Length: 110
Length: 111
Image 1 (cartoon, chains in turn green, blue):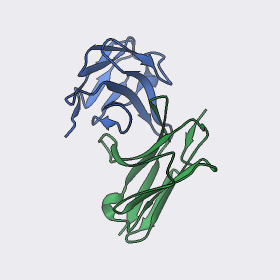
Image 2 (tube, rainbow over the protein chains, first blue to last red):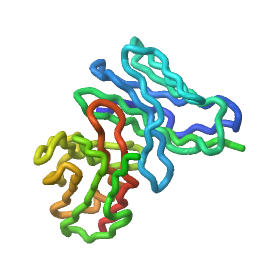
Image 3 (spheres, each protein chain N blue to C red):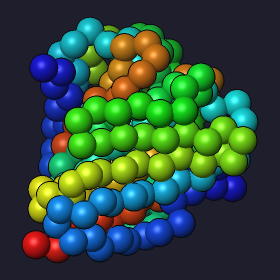
Image 4 (cartoon, rainbow over the protein chains, first blue to last red):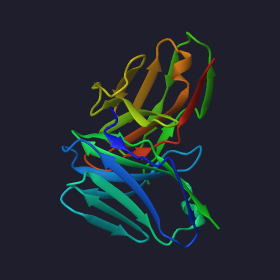
């Protein structure tokens, strides 16, 4: 039973445009959400997070939006850069455990 | 900077062998985790630990055990490796709530 879903396995975006990565969850007990970025042969690195009491958090080119009623979060990257090409995982925290989605491979086209 | 070090980047083992994957963190974090990453399945939690000598099963603990004798070290053990345990294994640590810091991963191939 996949509690955190990323329905797009891959996404290609032109350099300079906006990248939007989506994530849905089913467990209403999740109270904290995170995005991780992973390059090949490296461990995931933390990107940005949002608490369930907020609906938006921004950090430079990265913004995470949370829609609790829809159980949906999204990561916006603008403008997209070639170095953003990686696999992105969303994760949700409940009971001190992190549950990860299946990942979206983002490719930025120069 | 937090450093999580996994002892082996690449391992090749035979079916039935006992496998140890070691993980050490240098930031005095209480919490440590073992995940495996497989294509199309994301990261799945195998075991985690909130304190020395303490362990909790994650979502897929079958075929694995763990050991945490010291705060900085968390070991994953495959008692009898099988081909379906071929995967990328990721260790992580955290301090309380919030972000996990991951090691670089150990790619295990079981023949």
